[in-house]
Image 1 (cartoon, rainbow, N blue to C red):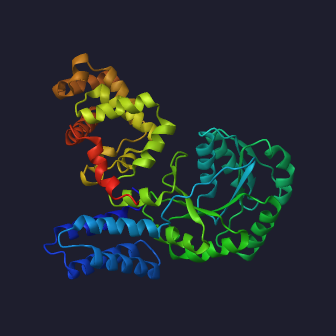
Image 2: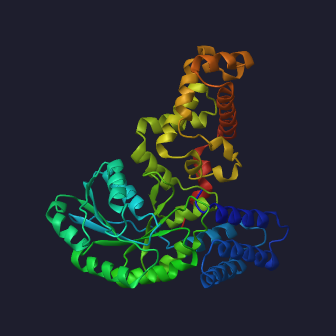
Image 3: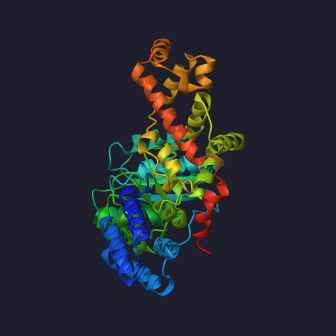
Length: 441
């Protein structure tokens, strides 16, 4: 989950407020202190935290009437969205070739991010190329070549110590592409030499976008780093990586404010598809457990056919399914990414308290499931509840798996069936009602 610890803290604060007997000034003050603690623990700049929570407190005391806890949730939602930039700011491809230059220090995930963006734009019909200008890190060229190959785009690499010379060597060929993603050198920290090199490339290449890549684990150093890169290249956008891990993330998210540039994308994992346009409204909604239907729909649009999406939706809402349905659903969901990341986007799921272990579908498990199912009878596939210890032994022997693995499949089925019962008969529009009511107007 994005910013898991911050998300948990915010949701716990809201739950605590909901249980309070009186919604008076004292309760509001306690609630605001809880929000402050959560943000400070997430590495958000101290002054920014107090500015934000002062606004929340002022509005709550003025606008919230006794018992109206929904209004406080709305205030927190709106102020957090405002705090993170209010509206999403996408990169608009307006010319050919559209050159995007990436800057950042070592370990920020710059090369991987280039691979993710290459896949993102090529899936949307653009002809994309990557260009390697990181001449200082020995493995940089090879890493860029590998991620470009995985993203199925052309990479331009030439081993030389002069990045300007490399750019000029390929300049004419790059004109044949819609988008050119340019990797530049990093350092362990922002140095005078790095600033000079970035400034020189900036003047020579004249990129259309200059993107600073920052890891969510950078903490309070984000402010100085963002300022330094902005002075050397005039940063026009920011990408925050590693938001799926244990990193606090607040420093990187708020450090962006010093450049005046918007966060364009966020990285949510190691795979090439683990990137999405940063939408403050959806991001905050997800953190508060209210889902992000816009991000979910975008994933469906690019990864799953309309027919598959409709079929999956019908089965999810029907609340009844067997092993065949489970397998088909998992195959479809596999295209979208890890289940825990997908489910947190669905409005209404944040409050269902679904066990985390039910999302633990590791790579390779689904293929094994297929082998197990091939060893089942038609009756067992249609009604998995009849599978006894003897049947487990037979299925295990026939599929070349262990009895423990067959039991694991049965456990996954039962957990999924339990979740389907929780959703059975629910109107999707009702699941989204709370989410829509909290949307900024």
